[in-house]
Image (cartoon, rainbow, N blue to C red; front, side):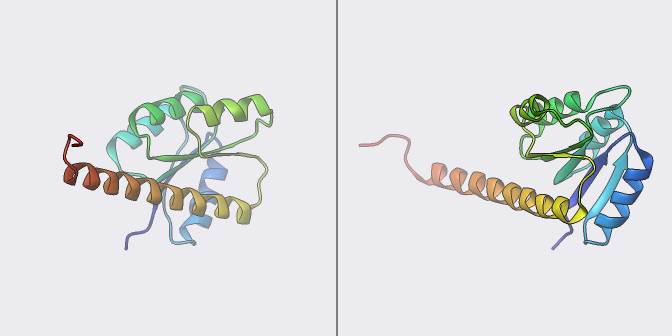
Length: 144
């Protein structure tokens, strides 16, 4: 079984490096980018199971990346990991499709639990879609 693929998107290069190392030690395949524009290009070109996304970036904000993911890759799980702590921002991110919202600073063990849950959620959603498609293909279109 392949390792889950994660993309870390944060303008803090030190945090990206640290997360890449720590998550790599947890058998996760991790890439990191430092701007929303690069994140969108990576997402278009490579399959990911989950994104850890900061909101504050220079060229394209995290909110725009989140909207892009929600519009184009609805099964891709996004965990917002940001320094913003206001509840309004958290609610907006959840409305845009984020799986969870975690404020910095964070505890790595807590982040790891949220990542595992998000990956389980993604797996369940995909299995549900497959089963629904199978059921729909075997049931006649008209009920008599």
